[in-house]
Image 1 (cartoon, one colour):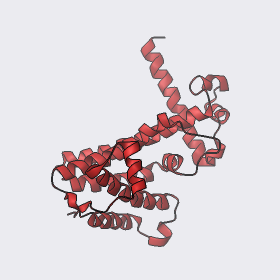
Image 2 (image 1 turned 60 degrees about the vertical axis):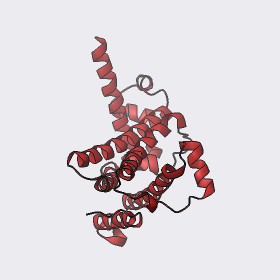
Image 3 (image 1 turned 45 degrees about the horizontal axis):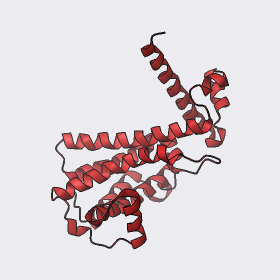
Image 4 (image 1 turned 180 degrees about the vertical axis):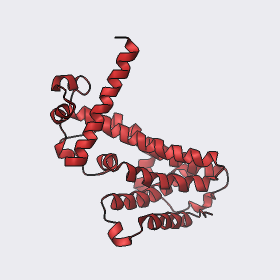
Length: 233
């Protein structure tokens, strides 16, 4: 078999395995996930499946990396569409925050895999999953920095001191200090609010309380922007 065809076949089989894993998680949760169960669904032998993922941990890691990258790619795509439409940085940020939620609503299994309950016995390899996880924050951080540099967001807005222990963490793990650390800190405040609301919605805790989750989320994001001195149209 020509090498190019073999590579395409391997990729298609790998994707089928991951799709089946997501289907099993949707039906039975992470407790129902096993390589043997996936092999049965795909009518493969377990040894054949091990060729693609030597262990369940390897498969889970691949699913987590795919989820983080997919989330980041979707948010970046929507942000870039706002750029192409001539939107300013403030509106780009707003679009990105809306996209963060929309991806979670469209991909609830992936969202719950990376942000939900830990999987018993599984420890994510930080050297593999951390870069994928950070790719999402990079979209927001680069847009915020560009907004400050362009004068759309006034740097004096970011004036509250960062708790020393938190600032030390930013310095050690992200190499951030001064104004960049302040911007990153404010971004984390916004992310905490945004992520918390999305998580409540995904687990069906928000709708019974607020009814219209679309309107509730948008108003909350606009209010958070206002607190940061960012006024939207």
